[in-house]
Image 1 (cartoon, rainbow, N blue to C red):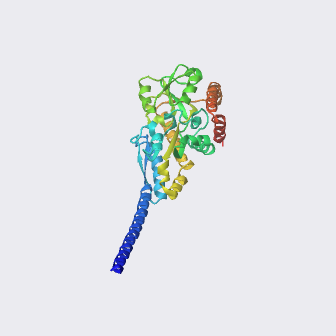
Image 2: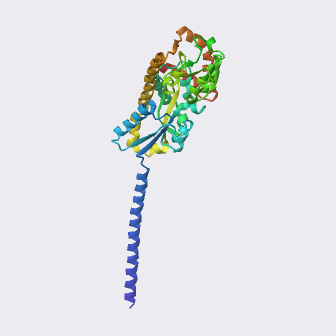
Length: 355
């Protein structure tokens, strides 16, 4: 009887041990499956691209769509990018923070929409540095690659490409500006603090406002003129209200295209390499080059519209520089006071622009 009880106990123990082993194996397999499923769910295969340009703007129809096409071709369609133009996902001034926070995967906007957030990147907004969008974009990206202090401005995100517009000129209504004296007392729309500085130094009264507001302000006489790249004559229809253009290559608008860090990490090494291979200086050249092409079209339209164009001579520029250069020195000092290499960045920008 005792022997039978002993046998039954042993069978029960063996049965329970077997069940525990099966449960452990099952749980382990389930854990592995769950881990695999979690890993798979983290792999990004669709990216949203947010920016403020209108749907019909060439920075959307040409530049952003070129990027999407390159991504599609390089990944055989496995990685998809969907563009959301017209600030439909984030306001122009919120694109960077939206990308940093993960509200969007990729964000594109203008540096000066958030003043003081990109102090060293603003070097390309200083006067007389570059004479084309392609060149300016190349210089800006190379500065980013060379200076850790500039890289720190993008520490919250992964920069895909940085770029500039073609140089900005002076557009006026009713009165041509052929000399510094002509500019004194005029109310001129300005896009950034850097431009405010040299306009003030030249005797003008800068009025800060977005380009979207500029047409109406010129039409109603709220301002006497605006500084802006050539392409704005077309893209914002300024050619229908502007009478004169003073050409001096006074500044450049600068742009960023950045990606959320978690979204980038979730791409995996293969897709990360794809983005690295097709962005950077390559996409900067596409974006800056499109502005250059648009500038040529704008110049043609300006002439056909009867706009008078005055090109400052080298001698004129030297006269303007006498008043403008102190504002450049002020920018350098402002950077240096923050512990940033303002002089080195500025000198390097000029050096790169001459290559």
